[in-house]
Length: 139
Image (tube, rainbow, N blue to C red):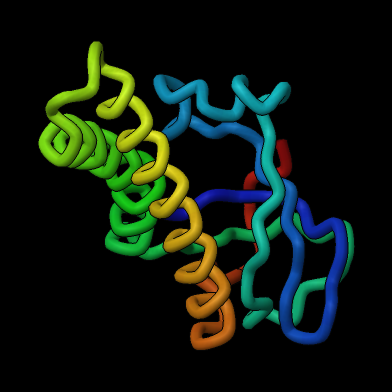
């Protein structure tokens, strides 16, 4: 996936790039849930670009899919599994309280696991996104 954006800051070999919603994002609207149609992305600055430059950024599709599954699907699976564990381990509890409690405990554990994974991942890999060149799109 290749997107264009404007570099807003540089620290060592990493650049923070402000990306505006492009054609590929038209049907998503995820940025709208954060209050705008733009987002900031940290990318490896292989092109030697400077602040204010409009650049093309490449993110490998398999990394996008992997991280999307981790962020969106794993918590849902954990809640279902936690609910099942809660009602299985405490069947004598009245109502579904033990299942709901199990679902929230599983959700909390998954968020901790995602946080640890993110901390480990950010140390072991420079960046999922890379600046591959200067953009011809100046919009």
